[in-house]
Image 1 (spheres, rainbow, N blue to C red):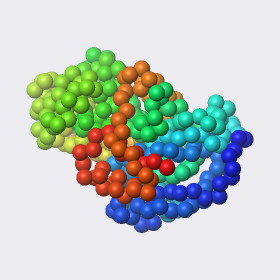
Image 2: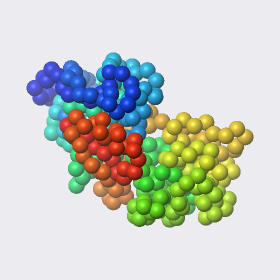
Image 3: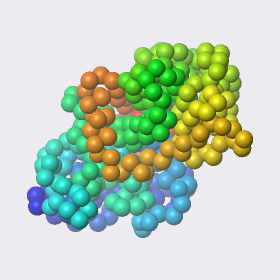
Length: 326
């Protein structure tokens, strides 16, 4: 087993009680170490996402881990410990080495905990190398939203040549969904506010409609029978549903259950199930390297300013991800 100095404590940003951004504070907690089937990452960058604000507020139920509960589903850094392989769990660590730059998805309420930490232990199949030519800050924006977009497109299973719509296309999830859908040969209709139109156009969307409560009608103006599938990144639920054709699919990221009587299949996208999807994360790495995906960092802040990052995110209008630096 390769190790660094056996650190006893580390910095973590978390909450002792659920609530607003002001509840996020810096803590000194025991430092974890890599066990069998695991590596430890010295985190350099952790992206801030809307999921993190929900973890901070306690919206996902009781944590399996003790307080402080640490948010964060996206980390990038440098491997500094490699555990032995764990054949019982099917986790092979032999492909990882101390010093490699990697990105990983984290589970804030269970397992090894959230990403707002100096050191994150990760199962060997939950990470991938960062894209060549990308910074650690840029790479930290990819795991959670990239895997969410992949899961949505896989669930919708629209064949090449089909039609796909995205609400919230100017957000990070929407960005990745548009670009990955184009990679799959789909015709993409995306929404955008006037100030975001150029950004969304740069992603390769075939058609752009103005965002708003009437987005479904605007999409139907382009595809009268409705699109084959839609990813509702803007969480418009019943407002966006009529954009989908009879028998089509609707991917929700907030566990919406659909409308009674509708024959549109609602797919509840749950990225927490992608924790062991290192192979998919590595495919996303390649998509960045071949120019399919574009990584965007809105700003980088010291980890101690996590509360400010959450306030900025909740105020809206951030394009690209805010990133915490450790």
